[in-house]
Image: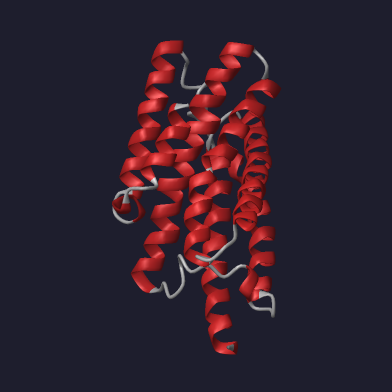
Length: 222
């Protein structure tokens, strides 16, 4: 409830979408992780705060395949499908900050620490079942994306009908819940958060770069 309320309220703060995104998200995730670890007496290993170089092999392979598909679409006639006004026109230092700092730190590290770290560990401690803990934390991860989906839809399609908004929200929640299950599997298999962080950051950053390329192609063809 605290996590869902936080993301609903914080997305209404204009500064959060600029300078506040990284520090505020990281601070919130760290506070939740510290509280969870202290109150439930969870160890660093139980929280997933470990990792080694071998943990990134599978994530990098998945990321390479994902990037090939995204950039193929971005350079095709289907480019408008993945164009995004939130990153339209980004270049230089602004784009570098977005894909190298904002997404990896403010999104991937913060969300993995929250959902595959603190919440997964807390639910697993409560129910003693990886499957139940994975389902609970992944559903929470899906619900977390309600506000960002609304923000993105308002920017890209201000005149969207209620039916389109409902469909977008349902699709986003379902997709991110399934993605959460995949990231949780990776976290359990590797024993830490490094693999999920790399995969999460890589997919989001590749998606953003693909959207930039798609936007530029769309402008040239219109």
